[in-house]
Image 1 (cartoon, rainbow, N blue to C red):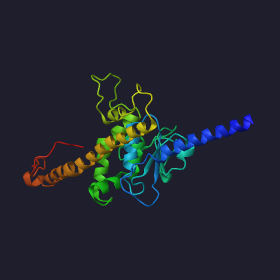
Image 2 (cartoon, rainbow, N blue to C red):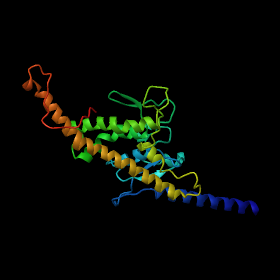
Image 3 (cartoon, rainbow, N blue to C red):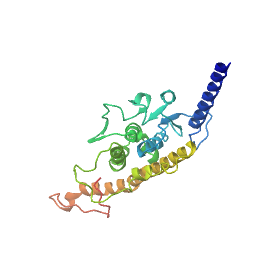
Image 4 (tube, helix red, strand yellow):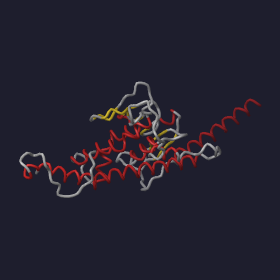
Length: 268
């Protein structure tokens, strides 16, 4: 009788624990639009988070395929294998099944186009979905030349730093110590959104809320980067390019250009 009771009691505890985890997982989404169709589910790991998966989750939820998907935070392989996409966990990089981890042995994927920094989960999502996200944000076709230009410059000026920091790649080829400490970068600010160790009794819901905030912080800066380069950098580039094309009308040597407008000195 004792064994039967113990077995039943243990089973009840396991069922309640599984229900608690399931409820947490399924309630992690924060869709902004209602839909009659079942939402897609995008997974990432639970526990301490970093900028790359926060940004990656933000970006992938702006695609047509995963628009406003629920976010599932878990390290359980049985949970992850049932999801529509998985970022920064699982040990698999396979874009055909939307698996975007970069921690596995032998992973050396880079963005290409001359960039050799190893990608994080953010860089992987951007590599495969960046043009779609940018095209939607600036309201152009994804094959428009300006979308391609923005795709490259946003990687250079925003995404690559997230990739490098997450992979522990130094910005400088030197062994000298930095002259000062800089903890104001996006990656540093996102990391500070993690629950503080001095408050060990924070709930899982509070942890998930912190991750949502991290997504917003990283995502808003990502969109700001796109819009700055679309609304300021591209027009400035056009002024410079037109002046270059007209340079021989200023001087036959072609060594002098005249800018028709004052534009920022940005060589990116």
